[in-house]
Image (cartoon, rainbow, N blue to C red; front, top):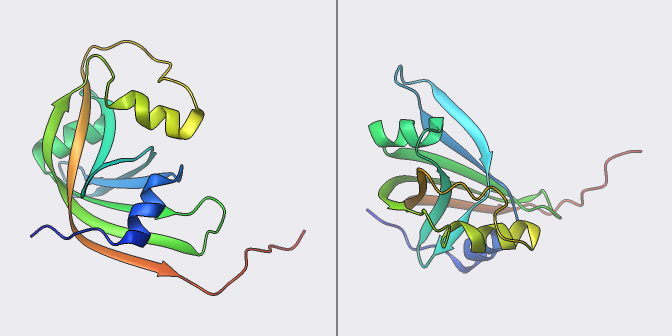
Length: 139
């Protein structure tokens, strides 16, 4: 059952924060990788190549988990569970380029369009937390 994203989670996703995407390997073990993330309304977007492990894993089992920590305040974070509900071919990088701009201010530099895909994720559960700590590690 899809869950609407809270305003706090949308803001966390819309800022240039890295996400960690967990997928399931054929033997059921988890595989986690840092990724750029985009948003289309209530859906999340992860762009990749069809030959990547995350693309292969989600083709076989669409269930995913993501965690996102705010870049400037690591005590603001969200944990998400969901599933890949669509695989959009992206040979012209029309989906990838806006996400690249969010993180680098430039179009995606690897312009080989073969096998580019946008994984569209429907959120089933979100857990947002902002702890009252200040990130001041000792020097």
